[in-house]
View 1: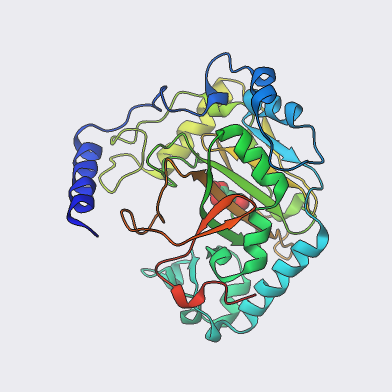
View 2: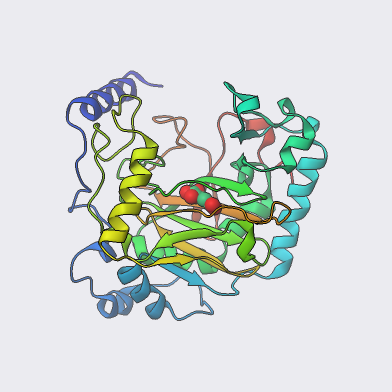
Length: 335
Ligand SMILES: O=C(O)CCC(=O)C(=O)O
């Protein structure tokens, strides 16, 4: 990293610590989050890159009010089958691959995040497992996360160059407590964040489906004692955060909705929408999903683990996907 970039990083760190962020910057929030955002006027000027099967105006209107959009039946089954072929092969032969995996089980503490081959093979097919950034290994995953229906919607809400920030692949429900994404998955501008939840199979009610609170992207933000972003020096915990979100959503009467979508449907949600994973009621029932987080090039002009370094960019349907600088040998290893 150049001297200038090192100095910039240091200044940013000091700023984070001593002048923590207390809210999103109104000057840089996406246009659709501004009060009085005019969707008709926007659509008259917006040059959509692809024709899409859904009604963009209806989806943008829903997004503005509710903080999410479901794009029904947009992904052809073959694209999902190609993804699953790569993903099944990865789990069949973990010793042949490099990929960061996290398993949130006490038996793997204190190193719950490891290379895939450093976990017992059978544990990869269990619960509490997150496969990180599989898109870097798999071309089919890159194609899925950059499906034209997803690119078009993200380009519309950001009205800017879209970049991929990270991805997670799940076989089972996550059972994660309620959270918002922006305090953890943070770009330079935390308001430049949206996520896609791509259903890799029909989602069953007893599988621990995702839930979210409709409209909660507008709720007052939680202060971690380090501002609105979670930091190593935060004085309040993720459990306190979850408790705040559940109680505030109830007090503000944001309805709780459970996501029961089908293979090929995609949920896109706002980086500030409160959501979590319901309890798994049937331990045998899988809930296969590919979850991708996106930002803008303006807000994330580098790979998140290598700020200040020039990224290697692959362009898929106009979306930028950064090569993973930590695992160059794995990039596109599944072609
Ligand atoms: O799919 C889930 O249950 C949780 C995913 C999630 O909350 C996230 O990636 O932010």
